[in-house]
Image 1: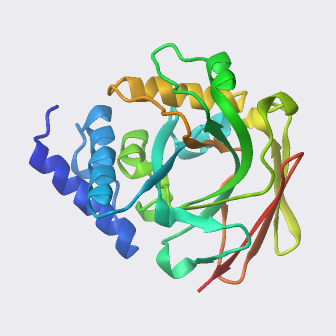
Image 2 (image 1 turned 45 degrees about the vertical axis):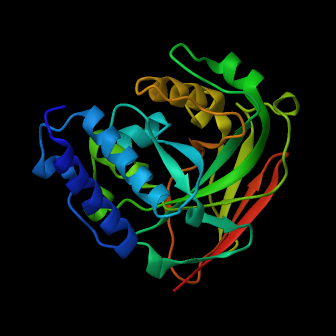
Image 3 (image 1 turned 180 degrees about the horizontal axis):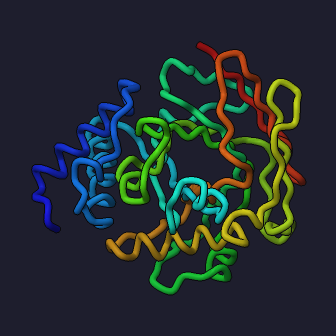
Length: 263
């Protein structure tokens, strides 16, 4: 790595401060144009370890930028990943405080829960499906800390892939009972349909995103343990929300999730 450990720690603290205090910052590649993907990945893991050292529990993982349309929209060329902290979790039907976020957006996703360890390199869809205990619906509330929600792939990886909050619940189903490629979702805000989509929006098949995660983690000697909750990425576009919004997402064969945004 070109940057020393002290500099990486400084950048990590800067980004976590932005998250915890709802401060917009400029993307880190503006200040460190030569920073590498590996350094940005390490920044994410530094903040993961910082949270764990303070008693925060890591309750899952997530993939981001898993649709070609979203990659083009954000000007990036590959997916990213992040961790889910315990305080990100909101119960189905719960309230999410806008005041604790900067510019939140909602995405409909599906989540995998593993029953066997997954590891790369070379992890593929078949490996993921055989290692999956069940599928369940999930809605992610993303909230980039970067000004105007603009970033590059390295900056967003350092920023924990815009992770902020998530809602899960609904109905759990085994993989054998679902066609994940055609699994449909409808997102409503205040009773009006704002978007719809199908599982194929996630890298062609949602399990491909989980395989991609296993292979990315292998680059740093990590695996996906059995019992891991993993959100596969967005089926719908990221839709901005404001105080007073009621969001409902209806999933084919997996039930419904809802949440309310308050001041």
